[in-house]
Length: 372
Image 1 (cartoon, rainbow, N blue to C red):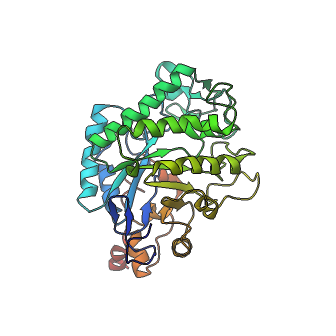
Image 2 (cartoon, rainbow, N blue to C red):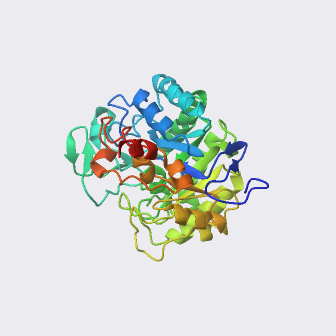
Image 3 (cartoon, rainbow, N blue to C red):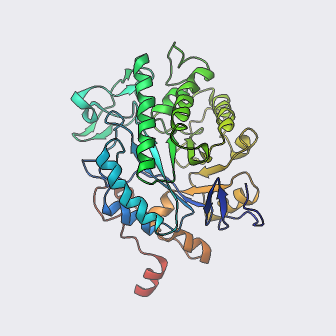
């Protein structure tokens, strides 16, 4: 998994299938809400990604695969020909910097609201189990979460096809691969976990059945992309969106073991606890997954440069994805390379605002030095 002749280190190259990454610093997918009400990729987004293109690989913000998949204001889509064409400009701009870019495919599932849905329909989920938590931001302001509608059997097949078509549009837009977002309490994660999946058909019950939905999505996308251009993201420790199942360790080790058979580009794990921890046992570690997954492992969530170096040099991780540090440090890789200090963290109010401020206006270290 290490590039031949190169010792493992955060700033060393890495061979990801047939893609050569210039370093192992990955830009994590982060919802930034700058696509507007039309959910259209745009020039502002292109500038944002280009500013951060020193990363070895960019994984885009979560991108909805259908109208039904929506659940967050002003996030981009990949369900129309117009969105596909708009993504081309972003991909081309990032490629001009010599950086590969994967599109993250997203369906919000129960973490949505009827305000986002066509004809005011309820959001969908594997089972009719409501999120127990804070209110959701919708086009009509803050609203309480609703009890979702459990998907009918024939609808599940249609959503799998939505994933396949989204993957096909991503390929046509020039992306280098796709990441299946199966984390953070969104639709696929809801199927995987016993807390949110209480179905009695072939998609529910034991872990083998709960895994079936993700399995079908992976295999559908394999008809579009080779396996070494498909990543999967999981959050075994996560409590976000009211997740956490008593059998989490058994569930996620089984899933990783099954995914190991496909020769995926990588398995992206939120092993850090920066999003919280469900506290149903001890946190799962990358080392546990290394025992059952022989492919490329990507760690994520709260890593410092020093912690990332330890994970890579000990070979429990091959790649480390950084989220929040990339928001306020477009030159994060250069700062790591030169041991320069990081900018102060961005304020949460800027993470999901709809304007350029707090998005493309963070200074590089050299820009800060010129003005200090």
